[in-house]
Amino acid sequence: MKSIVGIILISVIFGCSNTFSQEDSTVALFETQHVFSLSSGISLHTVRDEMMSPLMYRGTQIPLEFSYRYCGVSNRHTVLFYYDNSELNSSITNKTIASHYINNLNLNFQYSFATKVTKFEDLNTICFIGARLSSILNLRTHYFLSDKSHTSAEQMTGLGIYLLTETIFKKESNDFLRVEINIPFVSYTVLNNHYNANVGDDLNDLNFEENVLWQVFKKGNLVSFNKLFEIQADISYNIFVSSYIGFDIRYRFQYYSFEQYEELFNSKVLNNQFLVGFMVKL
Amino acid sequence: MKIVKSAIYIFLFLSFFYGCEKMFLEPDPQNTPEQNFEIFWKDFDRYYAQFSIRHIDWDSVNTLYRPQISSSTTEQELFNLISNIVLGINDMHIDLHTPFGDVYWKSKAPASYPSKRLINACKYIQCGSPQNSVFEYRPCKNADIGYIIIPSFNGQGDGLTFVDPRYLAIDEILLQWKDKKGIIIDLRWNPGGNGFNAETVAGRFADMSHLYAQYREKIGPRKQDFSQWKSQTIDAKGTYQFLKPVVVLTSRATSSSAEIFVMAMSTFPNVTIVGDTTGGGIGAPVYRELPNGWTYRLSTRYYADAQQRIIEDVGIYPDVPVITTVADSSNGIDRILEKGIEVIVNSN
Image (cartoon, rainbow over all chains, first blue to last red; front, side, top):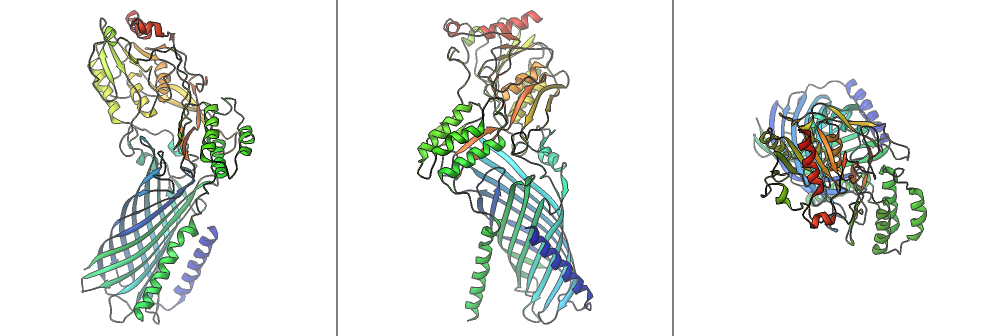
């Protein structure tokens, strides 16, 4: 995994140095726009948390996403909220009386900024580079027996390298393909040194009469690729049926993995989303 | 033609991302008898904290049982074998849940214990139905003493508040009984539950902050990977604390979080523990599971009291040891409760 990160980073740095050296185009593909979008569809959430189980847990859900995008002459700003709440099952769920299933709440907030770095006239494509602040909460309640449950969570707020391309297929058209990739390189997380469901430095000295999420959140640490690898890639196609109304068809791939305890007990989370959004352009 | 081309692209695109799961997540371990035993044994080897306290050589368990398992071992045979291991450890926080049945520890409560939870209740306390879903509380007859039974410490708060708010009703009970000469808390049949609920109730009797327990926990996969001793303190909680004489009734069936409660209460100057030694099992268990769907628990800590006397497998010895026998029970005598009332009456 670390080699993949290395390759991506080298490509980004190499790509940036090339693109910045090109003549800066002042030709804008789009006029300034404010685009609001409400999306839903299907998400496939897969988790392997070795700290809790050797088995993989999967579930599908109908997510909800709201986004606002500002498209300037040479920059892009995006704010996004994402929500889904899935029941995750494994190969043994419902097969025995003591079946284990997981209720997984997934919340995601992102703010992205990107500025235009180059334009490929032949491909009708503009490339942007920037940064994304993303915050993910995956709150899982593990139900083992009828009255026994255990709560686990990952919360990570990361600052990442954000790459964006926008491609128009037909001249004079508002329809375009957007490809986005974000890789956080530094994150504030509460994942450190967690050996099993009960034992972790971050779980000491909590007031359990009050909500523990905020208390745990305050005990986070800054980590990088040595502890956490995260990537999100979006491919979307925007079709405008009028000057103001359009549809966004999106596939999103989100993956992160981290180690719980000194090269032991990896946790891996994969989320595939297929979303269709209704857009209003102002 | 264009549509066919687009469909092919979409199909290839979806196939690629469907394949992502296999690329990023390894397949589940195989559901074979050997693999199931291997995971079970390794989980205990990594997580279980009480081998040395219970004088168990875990490597020898593998040496003894592993050769008995092959690909032709049936589920029933594997169940019999793992059940033997679970029963051999006999820790109250180790249990096994399978389609062939559930396996639990053998309780330390002797057969001579009376079978009824309350013996001749109306002789000692005012009769009536339970007044709260987690507490049964009534005044004692013939003495100005309050009597509370806490049948368990089960229950959890909503979301991420781990304390069950029903236990906060203790505030109301104590305010109602603030003029009583004392209170008896009966934990004789309390098997535990959520330790945070136990601390929540105990804090309402604390005069100040007290160190009441210490524990070491498994913090790594090697046998010697234990934390340093960690301290557990109990603070005064709630708006009102009852600081008059309190008696806590215990038995060999008082276990787990109920022992957390007893340890905490025993550090307060106004509290006397009356009854039999407690069950001796606190442990902080975690759940694990096997590819065949069996679920089990195991303890990841071992506990000691404030003086670092190990509680696991031993229990907490009462300040005033008393036993109610079956013969007492047949004659309608609850010796432990009688002694509790006596302790409070004499302390006033």
